[in-house]
Length: 335
Image (cartoon, rainbow, N blue to C red; front, side, top):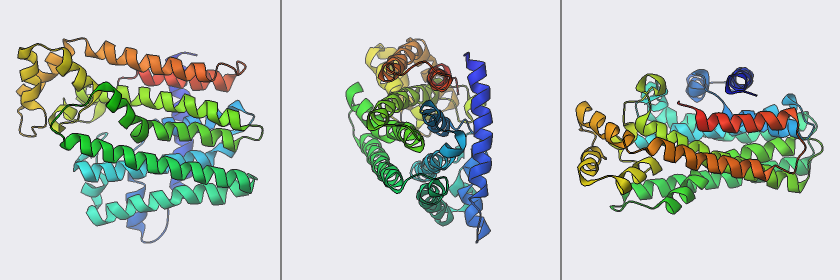
C-alpha cells in the first residue's frame, strides 16, 4: 500500500470522525460548543482515531465499534491543543486562529474542559450502546485516565525544560515526548483493541507498544517540521520553534554538531520573539545545512521499525498493513 492510498483512506476516516464528533458537540450555550469544536471543524488527519479503528479491525472489530473510542482519543487530543495554545500564547494553529484568540481565554478553558469530559462520556455511554462489556469499559476508562495523567506530566516536563538554562540530552527529550505525545498514540491502539470482540491482554500490550513507538516517531517529525517546515504548508512562521525557544531534538542536534559560526546564528534567534525574519531564515538555513533532517527522520524510522516488530507475531491482514502504512506515512510527511 503506497502513501497516497493510505492518505486517501485516512482522509475518508477523518471525514467520518469529524461528523461523528461534531454531532456530539452540541448544546447550550452554543458558543461554548462552537469553541469546543473549533479545531475539529478546521480539519486534520485524525491519525490517532485512524489507529483506533485499524487496531480494532485487526482483531475482528468494525469501524462502528471503534468510533466511540476513536472520538474519545481525539477529543482528549483537542483538549490538550486548546490548553497548550493558551500556555504558549499562540495566535494560530494550522492556519486558523487559536481557540483563546477566537473566543477569549475564559471560554477557551471551558471548551477544553468540555472536550475532556466528553471524552469519557463517549466511552461510557456509546461503547455500552454497542455492546461492549462493563469490564472492558472500566479498563478503557482506566487507560484513558492514565494516558491523560501522562500527557499532563509530559507537558509539565516540557514547560520545566523550557525554563532551564541548560540544554537537555536526547534521552531526556525522548522521556518527555514519551509522556507528552506517545502516551496518546499508545492509548489509541489499546482502546482500539479493547473495542474489538476477540482481543486478549497480550494483544493490548503489543498494540500499545506499537502506538507508543509510532507516537515518538510522530513527535520527532513534528519537531523537525517546527524548525524547517514550509510555512505555506504548516500555517506557522518559518523557524517557529526556534523563536519560541523550544528544546526539540532537531535544535539540540544542530547545536551539538554545528561550528561556532552556525551555533551563534542559531542561539541569536533561540527564544527571541524579536528576532528578525532575516535572522530566522539564516538560522534555519544553518540547521538545514547540517543534515539534521535526515538524522531526525532516521531516528523516527528506527522507532517505526520497533513498532512494526512489536506486532510481528500477528498474521498479515489488510488492517495490519494499513496501520503499518499509516506509521510510514507519519515519518515521510512534510506537514
